[in-house]
Length: 293
Image 1 (cartoon, one colour):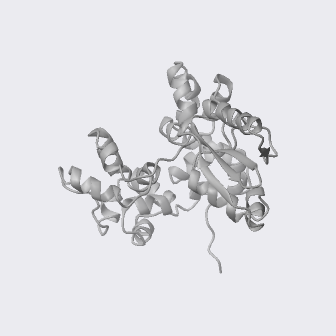
Image 2 (tube, rainbow, N blue to C red):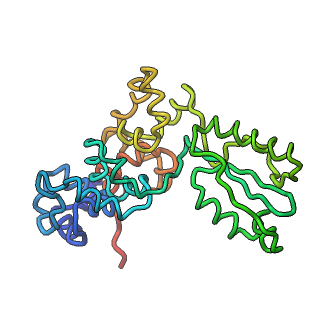
Image 3 (cartoon, one colour):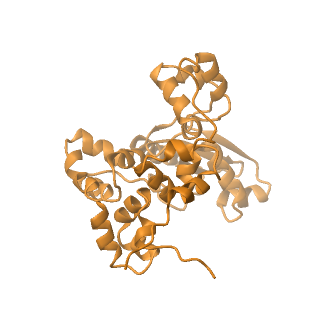
């Protein structure tokens, strides 16, 4: 049976009219965008879109500083204005334009904090975002901290360290628990000190290779799992773990799709083939959409 091609030029043009920029088009309709890119239709179907690029030299230090003032952290700046963040990094402006921002941690940097209560009890914790963690403790009615505050027990919230390497932070948490014990404080922590919390994973050769199998390109691997990517690169087996990334041809994806009765089943069974098919606009060939009568 011959499958009707869904994303014709006319349908792509109609779809593109829903969006104001190519980025918005790509993010919200990847299959149509992929078809346009494959057939060199992007310039035509996107002709109505707002030109977001600024002329060369537009982003001066002053304009970058103005843009950076919209954000409260470097991560927020990078996620929401990546091109300007890149210009700042290239020109070594980040420290200056981000001077107003409050430092926070990440998967690899944590700080130690404590809640000291007037009844001589203390809670010692480890976090990558001090303000956020404080709000979580206070707003969670089941937390030890919230229960103590509701009993009107006065307390002092302290940041005990800067954001430091996570293994050092783990050791420092143990240190401060012992410090408070030696000063006759009752420790409120239920879990043993030194736990890294969250979903921290220390990358090894074995688990980094498994991580690479989730992605269809080196770029995606680097973006979504930088720790595993860097380990592979530094140890010179990046090419080895990424060998599968260029093998997802149309025919191979089509063959795998025939083993599945739906898009969801295809996604669950063959995630890399699914992502590559979606990116290239092949999903409507494998699972044509039917019109509702």
